[in-house]
Image (cartoon, rainbow, N blue to C red; front, top):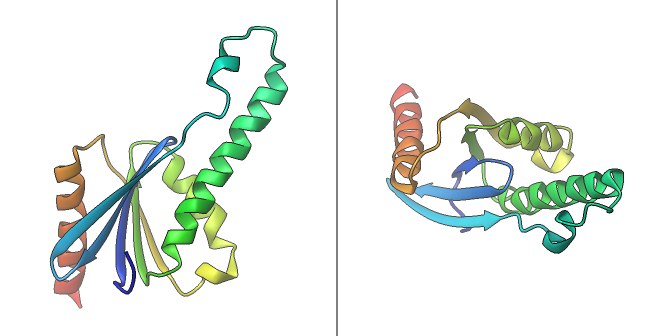
Length: 131
C-alpha cells in the first residue's frame, strides 16, 4: 500500500481497516490489537494499575503501527464509532513527520467493510468534485 496519496481508516480501539483509495478503487488491509495477557485478565489478583498501564502501552503501540502506514500518504480520513480516531489524530498531529499530511476526522457508525469502502470512495470523490 504505497505511492497512493489518499487513505481512509475506519477504526475503533481494537481494529483498524486501512483503505487505500486510488483510481476510484479501494484496497483494504486490517490491523487488530491483540491483548498480550488474555489469561491474566481473568486473574482477579492482578494489580489493576499494572493491567491498565499494559493496556495503554498496547493501545499506543497499535496507534504507532497505524502511524507507520500513514507516513506514505498525503491525505488521511480517520473515521469510526469511538474516540479512537481522535486519540490517534491527537497522537500524530504533534509529530513533525505528519505535518504535511492533511487529516480529516469524522464520526461514523459501525459499518460493514463494503460500507466503509463506499464511505471512503464517496468522501474522496466529493473532495475531487469540489476542487
